[in-house]
Length: 165
Image (tube, rainbow, N blue to C red; front, side, top):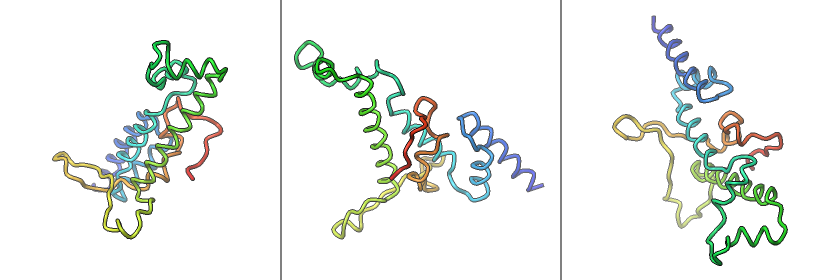
């Protein structure tokens, strides 16, 4: 009886992963249930980080990063265009910078930074919360999963994706 309840929980959780676009929903659901790890929370958090990155080919989205209109004629973005910079190149630079920030953020949250002896008593973490908003399980190893293709939204996937450093 208990085994069938566990399999039902795994199947229900796998379906949630599937709806989120996970390539290996059964595996992650089984890991979460059997090993008591917050796989769904990790998956959703990483997808949310990827939502912050400008979409592939969204040249209109560059306007969001145009900077101040300090000259009343379009500001920094206008000046870049006037220099003959291809907007696709600018887009690539902005997107890569954003991707590097989310990779670095994953590493910082995982504690992969070296604060030195002066701050060795300082630490932090990302935790799953219960219904009372109290921390339960740590959401760790983000840096290991940040480049998994299924946490990246389809708009960010590319064939030349580099692994996290």
